[in-house]
Length: 95
Image 1 (cartoon, one colour):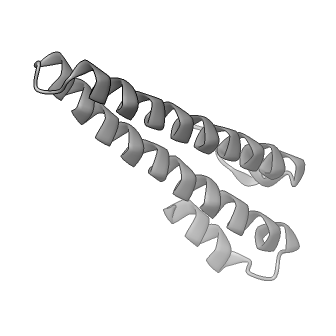
Image 2 (cartoon, helix red, strand yellow; image 1 turned 180 degrees about the vertical axis):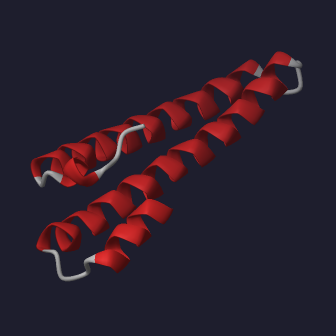
């Protein structure tokens, strides 16, 4: 995120940056949402494996998480494809 802000501050008039910034920000936002959803599901798994949650309740929560995860994973995959098509990763330093 800091690198994204740094790039934006250096050359705000660059059309590639103008196109890429919203896509890359949305990727970060969506990945954060995926992480939050998984953290919640991980707590549910702990409750289930500690026998503090009924099997039917766990299955329902798992099904909701799987549905949400599939939607978010598809969305982020599409965003990565968009970013790649816009050549957004050409300016990224890969360490």
